[in-house]
Figure (cartoon, rainbow, N blue to C red):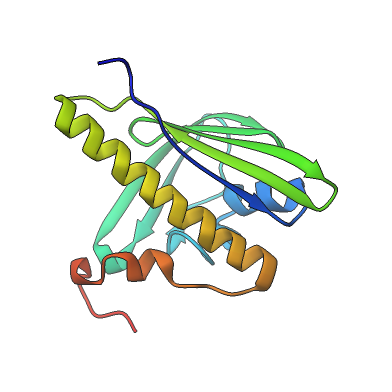
Length: 151
């Protein structure tokens, strides 16, 4: 089987600098994705993202930052964001994850989970940036997995 790449994409009706900042700065990202981030994404740094409702913590190694164009991290496999300005007020975001290992069923399952997760992140980001609304998609996606009740 050739390498599998999971991809999620979304048009967000905000300028590219604002959308890019939403994924770099945890003060913004926590409004639509993870609950806590240890710091802004910076090349060569490791940051920590937390989802306490799931008891989950991720250590993220920042590999590449090209302002308003590209983010590449290891989490633990590669995840890449590409930002494309479509007009002064719209940005197309593409998130790709790769590097899945194991048997065919495991690889396909992980790729589908990754794609589905990033679709939720992009939809929640769009709602937050365009309308100031947290749809609760991340917490509500798997309420049975919460380690404590979230309301």
